[in-house]
Length: 389
Image 1 (cartoon, rainbow, N blue to C red):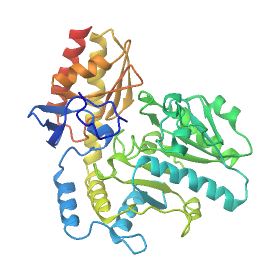
Image 2 (image 1 turned 120 degrees about the vertical axis):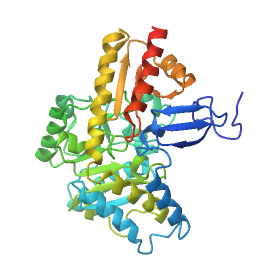
Image 3 (image 1 turned 120 degrees about the horizontal axis):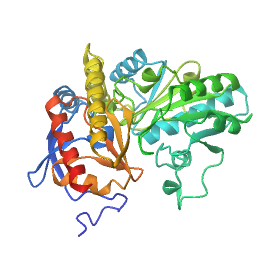
Image 4 (image 1 turned 90 degrees about the vertical axis):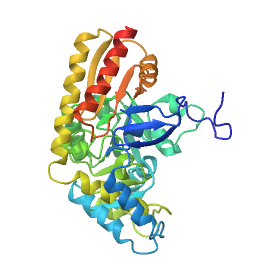
């Protein structure tokens, strides 16, 4: 039965509707409670109805929801300052989603090279990547299942093998403008880059005059146990994109760049009607203030390591688990079989998870997950694996 007959069927939806949530728990419209180990696909990193974020949004909604970027927006500057102070970046452009942030990253890379007169306009991305659903970002997404039926795709994109520097080198030409990479491929199955690979990309970019773009839409904002994944890898890109968890559920995207690249966009070269609106910025400011408070990220690191070690222990008891991979609060259980039945049975038993790349159980709990909640959720998953295999 189609419960949403007037909405286009662009999603394969779970058979429940969520009504409300607090922290790591959500409740459906039938009153059933679930532990949320999905976080809206790495969005509600501070959990549901976080008091600081909720209060900031309520206060701002009572004053001013929207203001055109034709005017000064002080809270936009406050959020940009917080982002720059905690990253490599000099300036920020605000959008509404990860796809928009990645579009902005591709545009600023081309614009920079145009201003420099290099003649470079092409991009290298990676097999298994995911960068969005717009025509440019789905072209950057090197997975045919997302591209089918949308051709012809935008020219100028080449696809290298992830974690394979030699395949990158083979694709570099005098027209290569930028390399775009996820430090951990999320939709591709929670596949982390090796430190050597990202360091090698940085060296190749420096050698050839190419810009390096990190897509941290899914892995930024504390998800890896560090504020940003480039902190974890100790590799600084020229451009970084964020979205998802930046405002804990309010739509917002951000494209960060270092000077002088950041100065390539000037009035009229790029814009967004809703980008950086006061409501989204109030949410983002509250999120950043919580995440940058002393001790917060230290706790996230400890909890993320505890999560990983518990999953590794689970692997020793279940032969169906081939591998545990990820970092911090983005973990993937790679199974010998499809993970669809695992995710479905966990749902029935009150645990929200996700299946990525067909056989990877993707685990994305809120960063505020308690010890007791972690134990409860993983006990459900452990029992489901025992019952099925």
